[in-house]
Image (cartoon, rainbow, N blue to C red; front, side, top):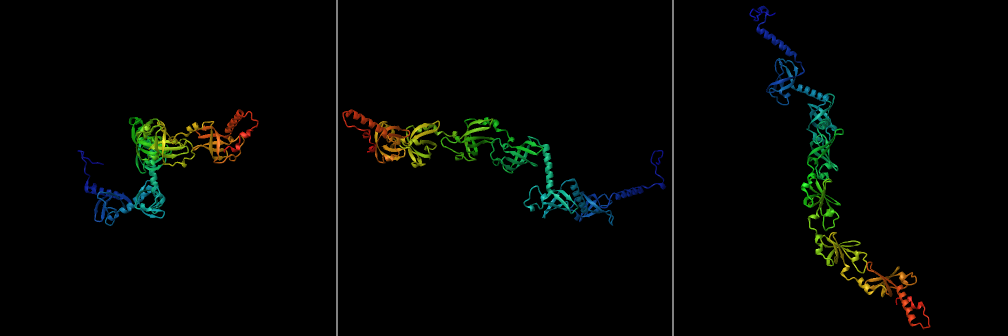
Length: 574
């Protein structure tokens, strides 16, 4: 109960029933001291503040009645004054009344608690790989030894296990059965980290976003790009606006690229990427840079049987057909004049923007030697030329580089049918020929060899018209008739049916090689180089003449003459 005077001031109690001021302060200090003592338990981990570092001791204030000192050897590094640390209260008081503290024991408990928390809550801890042991590695983690199995050291196969010694990595606590049985996994940590990143990727990324990636692997249909947490596919069709025949010629393994996300498959976790989509389609502005009939520089990217592909710029590629390579040469494959990587000047012949195709010409940038071929060679002129190629039907003759003519087998000889040109000619032979015709538009020149001489068939018809009688020498005998030399190298054939009125089984029974034979000319075929003769027709004429002569001159003659007397086949060749 308060004692107040009339003025309202607090009254001091009588001396017999009140504390002095000093006694009150002392009593209050004792109450707080008792309270402080009860707030601490031996073996407890408490937080303290470094108040001094002297010699080999560290003085720490934990809020107790006095500071405790800890040996500096319990610290991994010298602490700073004012630094907060965790220590264990080993005993509340020593003989000198100071608390006994331990940094080392506190660290062990804290570290072990961290390991337990990491195991139960699933978060990783940093550790250092110490050495290779049987089945894996020994790992120091939070001051404790742990076992890292080989299969859990990495997501990839490790070819050199010793290369990991000394590495500081994050580990997932996989198994925990006491301080001496700790199994850790770096692989699980990486898998968990990757899974988290993948989920974040698919939650935040969308089509059209630009991502950065590294070319991880190149295949025939494209490339796989590492975009951090997942591999995306860059299809060959999305590498360039132009044709890409070999991805390895367009991108390199390990190359860093900026790419655009084309599609995202959340269910299957697949991402399609595009490289060409990072730039505008050059075909949209093609006509601003290219015109028909104009010349442009390009590089050869691919050669095929039918032509070569020429890149005019990134994304713009045209076809140079094999027929557009040369005005004069017969080129069977573009590799005869081009190779991949060549820089060439070409002319734009045509283009189709819808189909994104360009037709190019190489010969069009050069003069066409066929344009003035008829000014250098006239029909009927004689020229020296070289045999370039021999075929069954004739020979290709080169007049000059790139200008060839054709000499048909029928224009080689007036008299003979040439069956095998290789018997008389070789590639590289120099021969004289006559220009028979020139077709500049179709690039054809017809040549002749026999035209160097007069046509013997024309004079043959004059000297031996059909129906005339010739005398010739038998040159050969066959089953189907007899060949007779008519004029120089021209032979006529007396077919077996034309040898006699009677049926002839064996022409050799009627004559032999070298015999002189008279026969009638019944046909001359200049094109086929054939002369047809007939002994039978000659005998028919001779028979008529003899009968007419007999009737005219010997009508009064009494002796009779038989037909056999007039036609004596046995002496036909004498």
